[in-house]
Image (cartoon, rainbow, N blue to C red):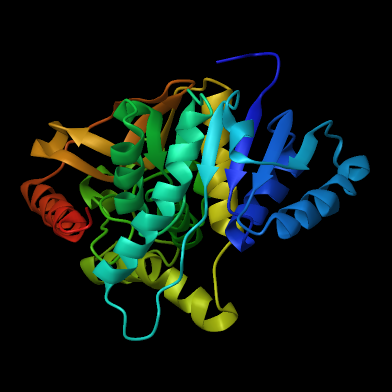
Length: 315
């Protein structure tokens, strides 16, 4: 990876993509950002709008609308493009249409000579990440999705609020599908080095299964509530993408619950799912297996089966 010019190519300038771009600008994450969209005029307008804020950001980013050939020397290609589900359309129909969209993206990106890392945010993100890997032919370590990174952040926020502790001192994860079958392996949830299951909440009462289930459900349904209130979610996921990007460009070896290919971990193979993984300049350096209970192993296996079944019939 080149060290002198950190370059990101963003495909898709909708609300998610531009929340990510805005976050990149405010945190000075990269040196060059190229915006690519089927609507070139929109990409040009977004680049202009971001450039007008450079004087306030403390950043020296080069921001412009471009084409797929601009991906050739990028460190990361981030994909936020996709189609929305139509009324009466099945999930598989949506997946087939998005697979078609991704064919029109991945092929010209790889043709450009791109040899960096793919970061996928398009939903259903675990399956779209697998499709990106399939179409690109890249080493699976260099193809990752946002996975359950945002879900994990939501969990830590809720646990921090309940225990009245800084969420940054909460070490707990949401794993599996970024969707209805995701779950929290409570056996691995810690506050500092203390297991959550042994603690008392902010109300002085011991944590019970009902409370844990309530928190799990709030994490799982958060996106639905946000969509009901404001039609879509974009700030949180944009910041999650930023966090993953910083881990890659900074070669941080940070642990994040991205959508990564499982190759024997947890007894699962050839499926992309949200799991704790070590992220650095090479993408997914390795998956970091948790010591799950038998019940949690079954929950993950069930979630992975849903992802495999959903993938069947796309190609």
